[in-house]
Amino acid sequence: MRAGYIAQLLLQYGADPGRSGQEARLSLSEAVDSGSPALFGLLLGHEICGELPESELLGARDLARRWHETGVEAELRRRTGSRDAVARTPVQDDEYNSVEEFTLGGVTVRDGHGAILTRAEELLGIRTSFEVLMNRALAHADQENHATWTSGTILLGGRRDEATWTAAAALRTHPDPSRRLFGAEVLRLTHLFDGSDEDAFAGPALDMITDWSAEETDPAVLTEVLVALGEHIDPRAEAALLPHAGHPDARVRCAVEQGFSGWSPPPALSGDARTVLLRLMTDPDAGVRKAACNTVAGAKDDDHVLVDAMAAVLGDTDRMVQLTAVYGLALHDDERCLAAARLLGPPLRGSLEEEGYFDEVRRYEWRRGRP
Image: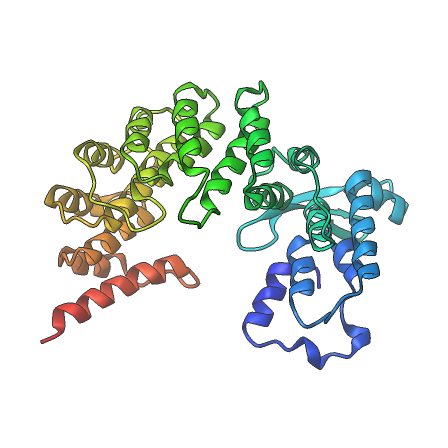
């Protein structure tokens, strides 16, 4: 088995790894060779392996480092002896992270060895430097949500120490946008992961990213900075978000509306935020329209102008925008969701998102029908 996500699903739905003999179980080195961080993590996190000796973890680390430093294509050629063209395909490794899959000479390997190496070092108590983790991530800067990038930023964000904060903050003025993006993500996660009442990085983070948002020119970096701003429920954060509502890049506009929702239950929306959301609900990009509807759907207040705006997009050309509006109307106990849901028909088979939207309509019908 080489797909960690499938392995996770099998375990989630009742598969029992203990029913296979010890000789049939995947070894840690085989999991490393697969290049799938999800599969490696699953093997470590389940009773499949029990208590691993340090020597086995050291072997896994060394093997992952060899794959990572040599490169998947070069190592595949060495192992297979093939000179054929290598097939490369981006794939989801788990629910959130992607990798690239290489096939040569009948052998298929994923390129998540950097993430596996990072995980093995963490388990061995090795404090890998900021620079090393960043360089691993930058090797996959052109791949969205690559597992090696994610593993590095999450590990560094979880350290929540002054040295990591200083190293990430220093990247703000770096000429390479990929490095700025890495720094911005580490700073955002440092604040996000701090669950203490003091949250020592909250004030410095807000001051820095507010200034950063006004000067950043790269759309991907600006998007990350604005997402970080939205995680601060503060008038200064809203004021810094508003100027970017008309940005030409849809990712940036999505980050603006996301900032009004916050990652906790949102407060009542300000007048300026309402004005921006009304505009974004009619944005040229369907993804922005859908996201804006979702933000309005979750708003605490029942502003009739916003609710009517959701009803207006029931006639949108995009089904997911329509469904989000139906969902929002149901949350706001607006009966217009019922006829719209009937017109849309049943949820698409296998779409958990659509099922969730229709479930909210059913909950509204239940609330309405109670004595």
